[in-house]
Amino acid sequence: MEEPVKVAVDENQEYVINMGPQHPSTHGVLRLVLALKGEIVKNVEPHIGYVHRGMEKMCESITYPQIIHLTDRMDYLSAHINNEAVCLAVEKALEAEIPDRIKVIRTIMSELTRIQSHQLFWATFGMDLGGLTCFFYGLRDREKILDIFEETCGGRMIVSYNCPGGLMYDIHPNFQKRVKEFIKYFRKILPEYDQLLTGNIIFQERTRGIGRLSLEDAISYGVTGPTGRASGFSCDVRKHEPYSAYDRVKFNEVLFSEGDTFHRYLARMEEMRVSMDIVEQLIDNIPEGPFAVKLKPVIRLPEGEYYQRVETARGELGVFIISDGNKNPYRIKFRSPCFSNLWVLNLISRDFKIADLVAIGGSLDLVIPDIDR
Amino acid sequence: MRSIIKYLKEIVMAVWSLLKGMKVTGYYFFQPNKIVTQKYPENRKNLVMFERFKGEVIMPHNEKNEHKCTGCGICEINCPNGTIEIISKSILTEDGKKKRAIDKHIYRLGMCTFCALCVKTCPSEALAFSQEFEHAVFNRALLIKVLNKPGSQLMKGVE
Image (tube, rainbow over all chains, first blue to last red; front, side, top):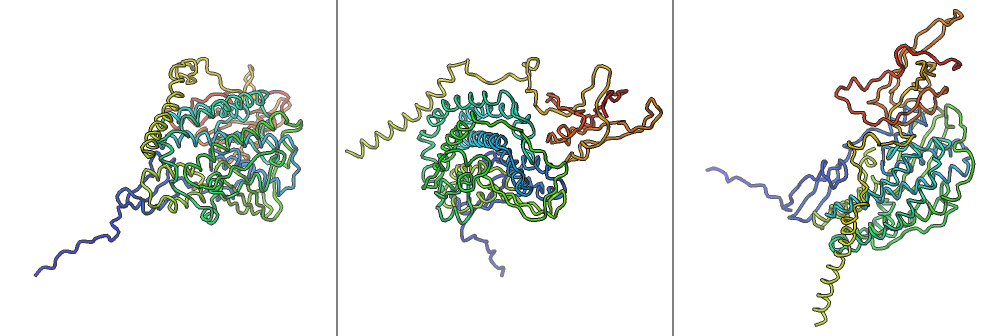
């Protein structure tokens, strides 16, 4: 007699699908393997490495000034802040005295970078949730900052404006005028953003109470940036360990305690206002002086270990350099914010619907090249 | 009764929030002077890029077909990707001495990451950025460019 065929039955009845690597709302080549029960997400397994370029290894074979242009391509939306991190680490190691002018210009540029990054966040987050108009309006206003960058640095996203010891060029004569124009313009436009998206009932229903991240989880996963601050984790490096000219400006750290998708969004909207305040305080007081300090043509760091952390638009970026006294680093390690922020995705999107996963993923504001490096 | 009023109020507020958003989009819909989009291929003739825009690396020549490149190779050393390659030759100067000069300054546009280190570190300011941004070609070999023009010479007074 023939044995009856046994049908393998999955006890959990979970349906496993791939989201990405080519999916518009993963914002790059991120592959999420989802275990679904109907429409409910039961497990999210991020698979990374699709844009891995071996940046840390590449850095070991090139000199310090050459590293700068690679860091542009990590988190391309906060390119200038990444540049600054490496420059500050190198300058710390060389114990170089940096004039005030450089510090102030770097701070202004960093804050402009933060604004344009959050503008793009607003644009794409609106688009993820079905508001295509946000995408056009966000990019329209971002263009104004990119024009400022293009005029002064020569690049729009990939600026490469910092170099160890200062800046590549002095600011363009139009720089101050254009930044003031932009601030004036954007203060008028920002309430429109709120009218269009923040108050929208569909948007509120889809984000309030979705993907709640508790303070304990935020700390234990090392979630930083606006994502962490929305959960009440006071982690602003600009406040706690001021670098460049952040010690001479007054600003408030944006903190919320709810930690849901809506408040992660609100934290970024508030940060745009804070950034504008910082720029306004500095733009009229750029001190006179040289735009770069003359360092040796071949930069050799003294033997030792150096660490510098900065606040990018997405969180805390750490640069750790081990030098053996040569002109290229023995080992360099980037602690990138997106890598840490990604891993809470499984925790906070469990038991929500698959459409909420898009909202949660969007609110983490991931940049995939920053995860893979 | 109270819950019905609350329910109706929520509906009215929801519709109101949508109308508020539509007010913004409607405003821009009826304001054609607020359009910021540029019609790119049509406006090519009067499209001006910023003077610092990093289009591609060029070697400026003067009207006598002279350039400033001495062939020292500092740009080649500083380039992080091996974009630049300098092939040098030795020439006889007027007073009969042998001197090094460039034969070909090869620039591979396809590999360039526009970090501006070559332009910045050149001791004789022989390199510059052009504002050209339409780099697309049909053949990959066309991206390998020789920057010094044929028959060009070193500018007098540049060492």
